[in-house]
Image 1 (cartoon, rainbow, N blue to C red):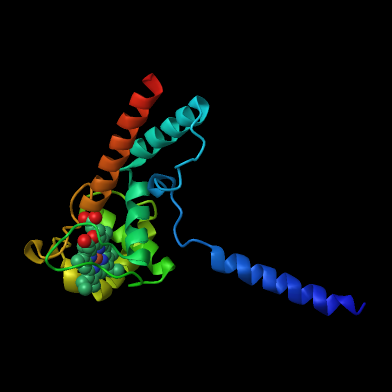
Image 2: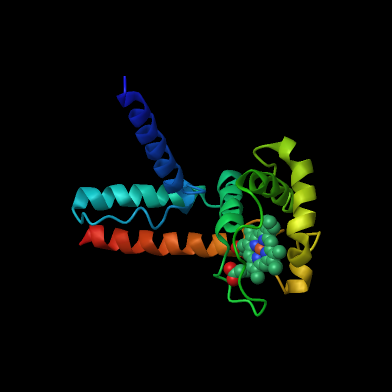
Length: 175
Ligand code: HEC
């Protein structure tokens, strides 16, 4: 009986440890760093090629664009080299980020996965993002990234990187 409190405390500790380890956004289409493997066998390389091709095909889909935006809101972005500088992470909570991402989809004429998020997303966007990206999403005349592009520039860079990795893996597999 006396062990009960101890057991409870250890369970609580375990839970909080797992909670901290949780990554804010996990997306197969953004997982290019995780697909690297130390196993260089032919089978492992073939598996990696399939996974990369899957990521390449997913790039540009609504699901992937939304995850990309959620990821930028959570982690920030420093890939475009604009004179305006980088974007810090943490502009919105993960829940609000989903709503904002849904709204941003509509800026390039896409239907978001959750159309019911758009109205709230619009409000959050105007409050947190419009100051830089403009209420119309066009980036205040190019000072900030244009969020109305069908494939956002950073996502395009990611896609280009995946394409390069696919080419070099294919060359390796032919050897
Ligand atoms: C203080 C100005 C500022 C605010 C506020 C801001 N951003 Fe940004 N954002 C930037 C800059 C600068 C970049 C480009 C950073 C880089 O070099 O990668 C950027 C990049 C992005 C990108 C990637 C664009 C691309 O072409 O790949 C997305 C998506 C984005 N922001 C969405 C948002 C959203 C959504 C919000 C609100 C929650 C927001 N930003 C708030 C300045 C801002």
